[in-house]
Length: 210
Ligand code: TMP
Image (cartoon, rainbow, N blue to C red):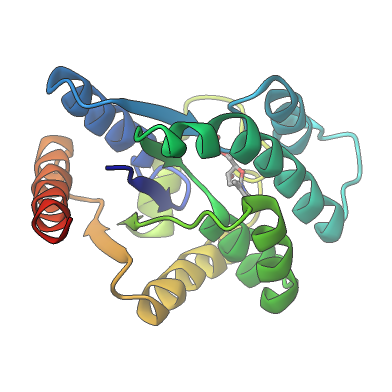
């Protein structure tokens, strides 16, 4: 059985900790699983990630940004995600194509249709089976991040992050089967249990139908 699970959310939503928690639980159960993060996960992806997050002195247009995220994604899909899914490993991905729709589409204002085309090209037909959307207020999320220097995205105005949040909610409304929206203001352990329970149900359902 292979499953492709993505974690999405705005800044400080706690999705990375939840992705790590799920990875740990699956590993302890002896389930073959890998955890990757976008942008990154390959040598090329890490270089692109540094540029996208920390190149404060380099102008990057919204279209350039879209293409760079997808250059990193294309490498990650062909080098890591696709081979893992083909051998039956569960793949957990911290951010994926919905981040591009939320950030470069809803927030930066690029055409959602164009983003979808480019995302599709980079993904080679791979789509998430489930997406956990960690949902919380922009202020709540950003306040959790205030301890270190902000990157290019964290530095954006509150209005930008509001658009990201609304964008995610819109995406979830369009695909209620795939998106599981979780109140990210709940305690960490409670969220981890909700995710675990939902995943358990899904695995059981998949076993019944296979
Ligand atoms: P993170 O490493 O803290 O998740 O940061 C990645 C940043 O990149 C985050 O602010 C969201 C942004 N991002 C996009 O704008 N578009 C994308 O496609 C992806 C994957 C991330």
